[in-house]
Length: 156
Image (cartoon, rainbow, N blue to C red):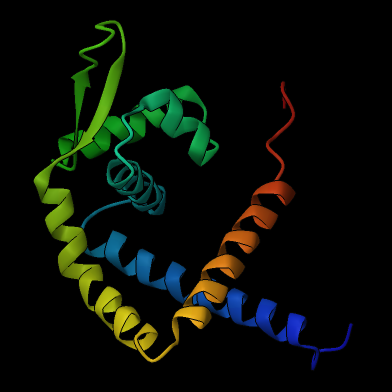
């Protein structure tokens, strides 16, 4: 495959976009006294909330590839900062779920809102078929990364 092939160019664009988004997330973390992993956790929690899913600390650990002690420290830190709260699951009182505080949502909207607005405006220039193709492409790329990424072997 050469660098001028469309597939190679798209992968290069994804890498560049990933770097830009990582830098933006890092800036958000610095401004609000968060660790970059905290930002990833907030993203997971926002997406779960939007999907109407309740998420436990154990599920958060699995989605972020963290062990239980690390995610406990992360949740403790985010709780102290007023970004999340622990709630008992009404269906199973033994289970503790994580919920976003309004403060976390407000911070996210104030910081990332302009980017979201720019992205929505940029996509308005695309036809519905083009948006569908972009959506499909991003879904396939996300699945490719998830398939390629291997969790650590047990005991390592």
